[in-house]
Image 1 (tube, one colour):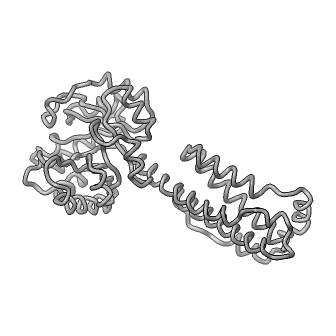
Image 2: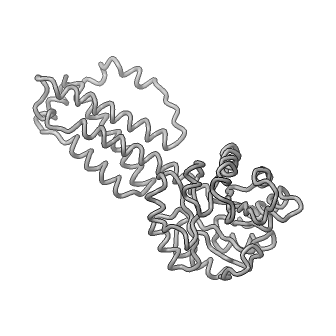
Image 3: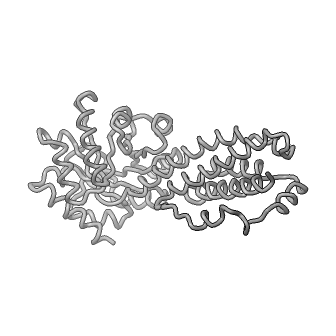
Length: 346
């Protein structure tokens, strides 16, 4: 029994440490990190006398399962796979220790540990870590050309066909924006766009409507200053969904970052035919915001092939366009020329 306890305490410690380091260094989430650290310390700390007995019973070289463990290969291509594998490792060890603690011959100290409680706590931590990693991956993909499929600009043309063309041209993010149709009418449109974007590895964002984003499993939502506040939206949306927030000043951009927005929409950089009444803030304000925050920045407003490079050089990670693409004679080619501006700016 001592060998089983020793092996599972080791596995428990190792697995928790992997999860803790991912939370600490990758996600930089102090709350989850501290929760995992406390769990590791409380579950692994044992009486020195028992520790000596466990070490004396250890026989790693003669372990009949050693060869299989060394020779096994697990395909882990993503951090989320590492989280899943190590969470499962910890959960299995906790279950073994939980069962052994019920036996009369088990060390008394083992029976005092709350292995079952820790196991259920870890189920929730695994879920949160996985969802936060998905969200971080989506945030990291916010780079390149961001095309807003504005219903008013498209007119009678199909959003789905426009999406296919801009994706072929090199768009990395697509947003659905419609200020007039009902959500009931928009649901099939958004679902089709989600399907097209998912198949191409392109992010799909819904403008304004959190409920529509939820109903169609969009990658995220973009909120204006008159929409729901970011903290409230974060409570409603699953942890894997990204939230973009419009900000025209340094102060608003810093506030959005503190409220856990995932990217900041900054504009209008130039006057825009789509929003002629929008305040023009220029490249200087864009640079100021870039210097103040670490989040991805999506620049918008009057952007086209002639100015995209200077906007990127001023600090934008994404350039959002409407008119420059949707009103072009050849949408795919117009998108391609704009996307090429990112290469020229680097």
